[in-house]
Image (cartoon, rainbow, N blue to C red):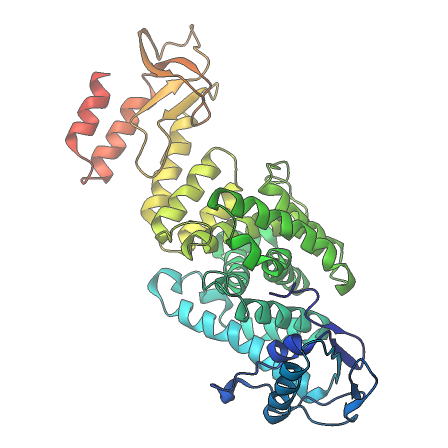
Length: 429
C-alpha cells in the first residue's frame, strides 16, 4: 500500500505519479467496474520507459484500454519503470471536487435525517454547501482530500476504509457542535472561524490515514497510539498547504490530547476552541464506527464523554452542547445534577462515587476528610480505594451527609428504572 503522501505530487500544471500502480489507484481503474474510472486524464509529457523509449506522446488521453496495454507490457517486462506526468486540468479538478463534495453531502444527508442528529444539524443545513464549496475551492486542500479518499479506497482492510469517512464525520460533528444553540453565542465564530474548524477537523488524521493499512495489522493495544503518532507526523506533512497557524496548532493540540495534554481544555483562544470541539467529535466518530475497538451506541459514547468532562478531561461546554444537540436530555440532566450537588459543598470537596457513567454514583464522599464539616459522617468509612479512581486517590473516604440524600432523592424522582435495591444498598452503607 502506498503512503498517502507519496501517491502523487502536484505542481501548478502537472500531477506526477511515481509508477503504474499509483496511476491505477489515482484513476480508479477496475476492469470489473468501469463506472468508477476517472475520465479526462491527459499526459502532460511523453510517457517513456527507463530506456527513453516513448510509449505514449504528450497529450494522449489515459483510457482504460491504454492502462490495460501498459499492464500487459509490465507483465512481460516486470523491471520496467514508468513515471507519469498528468495535466492538472480544469476537468480533473471538477471531477475531484464533485467526488469529495458528494462524499460530504451524502454523509450529511444520511445523518441529518436520523432522529438523534436532526437537532444537531438543524442550524447548519443552510450553511454546509457554502462552507464546503469554499473549502474545496482551495485546490491544494482538494487534492489532499482526494489523496485521503484514494488511500481509503486502496486499503486492504475493510476497517481501514472507514478512516476517510471518519475524517468527514469528525468535520460534520465539529461544525454541528460549533453551531449549536448552547455554543454559538459563546464562540462568536466568524465564517473564517468555521472554515478553519472544518479544515482542522477534516485533515486531523491525514498522517494516520497514510499508514492505516500498516497500523491495522499491529496488535490491538498498539494501534491507537501508533495512529496518533502518525497523525502527529501528518501535521508536518501538511505544512505546504498554508492552512494558517491556528489550524495547524489546533491539529497538533488534538494529537497532543491523546498523549496526555490537557492544558488547553479551558483556554479561550481560537486554536483551543477548535481543538476542544474536534477532540469530542473525533472520539465520538471513532467509537461510533468501531475504529480500534467495537462499535458503540451513541448513548454509551456520550455518557463516557460526560464522565470525562465531569473529571475535567474534556471541555464541559462542548460536551454539554453535543449532549443536548443529540437529544440526550436525560444524560444532560444527570450530569447537570451532579454538578449542582458538587456545589452543595462550600469547600468543593464532595465527590460522587463511583463516577463511572450515567446514573452510576450512589453516594457522595469527602475527598479530604474535612473533620470540622457538620455534614461529614465520622463514624463510618464508606469507601476504601486500593487504587485511584474517579478523581479520588488510594485511601478511605467518608460519606457526605448533605449531598448523598439529595442524590438519592434525585434518583427516586427521575429514574424509576433504577432498582430499589441499589438505592437501599447505598442507604445502608
